[in-house]
Every structure is written in C-alpha cells, then in structure tokens.
Length: 163
Image (cartoon, rainbow, N blue to C red):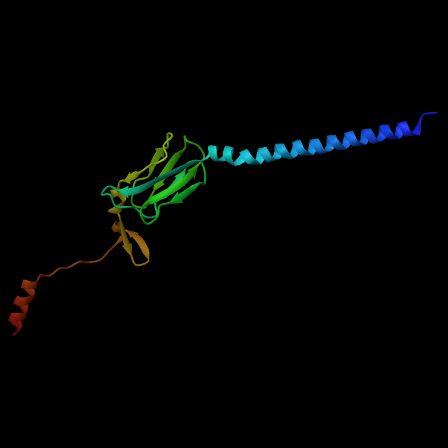
C-alpha cells in the first residue's frame, strides 16, 4: 500500500508549484500588457504628425476661417482670428487642401515639414459674375433695372431757372 503521507506531500508540492506558476504567469501577462499600454501612445504619436502654420492673402493679411483638410480623410481644421492653424495628420507624406470662398483652392504636400505657411490668391474669374442681393444671390446677367445719374451743376441750373 502506498504511503498516504508521501502522496499527500507530493500533492501539496504539486499544488505549490502550480500556484507559483500561476502567479508567475499572471505577473508576466500583466507585465506584457503594461509594456504594451506603455508604448502604445508612443507608437501612435509617431504615426501622427502635427502641422502648424498660417494662411494669408497676397497682401499679407490673415485669412480667418480657411478650411484645411487632409486629403483622403475627414481630418481637418480652420484658421483662427490670426490666420493660424494646427492639424495632426496621419503621415509625413500627407497632402493638405486649403480652400476659402473667393480664393483659389491649393493642394500642398507636407513632404516632412512641420510648418506650412500659405499665401492664397483671389479667384477673380467668378467674382464679376455674382451680385449679392438682399438674402439671395443672382447672376449679374439676370438682373434688370435702370440706373440714372445726375451731377450737382445740372441740378443748380434747373433750380435757378425755376425761380
């Protein structure tokens, strides 16, 4: 017959070893997760790149509310009161689209730069064809009406003749 004390001691030893393995496995599993979570922001931050700059017209005046969009994404921003902007893009090879009403749209490749300052040119081809009327907009060719002018000298002559 087997010795019961010997079997009981072996079972206790095996339980202690299994318990130690379980604690060791939990420790290393938690350590791996901690390392993973520790470096995830670092890896994520390397895949994003912050671009800053300003947008001005050709005279150097800041343009407020210029739309800046990373092409191929819905990632974008607008310029502030000083024409400045800041945008986190997905890669250093991204392309930015600058657009503003009355100005020519511009596509600019980042090419590893951190600061991109833009001068926007007026889009004059469409400005002559639109006249703002009250709450709506109409083409200049669709408007009808009469314009007359009179100068001060003619008005004085007519007033003097009436006396």
